[in-house]
Image 1: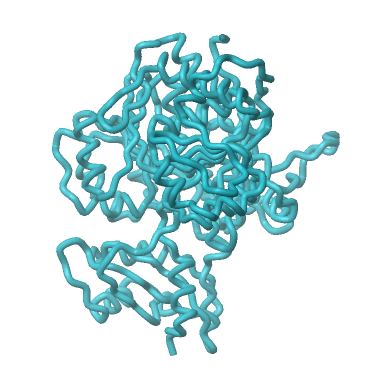
Image 2: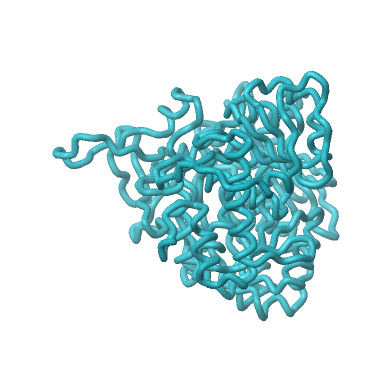
Length: 531
């Protein structure tokens, strides 16, 4: 084995050669070292070959976070396959759609989940094998697939196979599908490796780290906890949490040094008390999947003053794009920073020319992290992955970049600021309003726990602004009080026309983000539109 990994599964092999006895994965009270995990991943890849799996075949993985989930992904990668992690909270029809869309030939799941999938799997004609982790399950009558025990696949003797190279596809990550059916983003070994090395470099990950995996492994930032840890030879703690306090307890119990989460979870965590012991070992906390409200960031920093905050921006189509160094947080807490190592971020006008400082434009990502497109969807791929304009005249072959659809601006020093997604911008009274800007003002009142802003059709305004929110922990929220606070902090055209106060957590999409699209559709379908 080379001293440096070039393909995804080699991350484990290199770390196992270097420190075989070092802890790699902790889950449910037990820990596996690098030698054990690397051996099992290689064995599982060989076992897949023994049941007829071929290079380029797709492997669906429908499991909660557990050791078998990691073995399945890296084992499939070692066999030249393409693994497809399916969010464990998805329902049977959603899982079946993904398996059909990517034409998966293998599904790895548990007996309980297999039973819940039921007859939906009969609609997946390419599915030939199901590998069951745990108790064996009999296949239904008429099923077109064979059922195997996970342990039996692990125990298969070695078979010859074609090793992958770094430009081969290795994973398909499905987006949450807030604007229609989910799309499968195809990532290569090179994409994954470039992301692991880049993120680990600016987070300073090392072998002494213990990273807490709270995000779904079907989410790019969730799977990144594995790749960055394995690149550094660090430990990953897999957590299937039910409540935010479970996260706090695990941070303390496992002496976690690095935490990455999305803003809705951080909002909940900030409302809880943290044991003072966490500050002694938590080295950093990182945000992805949307802008961190300033009030939440301030509270978190007071909870763990020794931990460095990393504010990040990414999109599945390019894994990770920007980060704000911790030393800049006090100067520009609302910035998403600059490009991560080995990436370039451009802010372009519609004609492809570069925007001036502070001029809004589309964020465009170029470099080694740009994905291979959307699986089996040429039209959507052509919309998002486009040739980079204005390149040197002597370069004949096009370079494809990701056009994010997100509107940002860059200041005079090159620091980027997120304005909003094109499909989420609210167009009201002739203005284009960012929902995140309204939400930021709401959090600043300290009256709300969670908040979502969106636009709904209005005969005069074009769109009217609606707010759905919950009260801050331990408090009550009066609509008139919040409306008055909005009028103090926002210009008239940004003041909401409707405020809906709710008692429970706001709905989330499968990646844990507050689902603005679902909330807006709910208002439209119920015709609860402001007059």
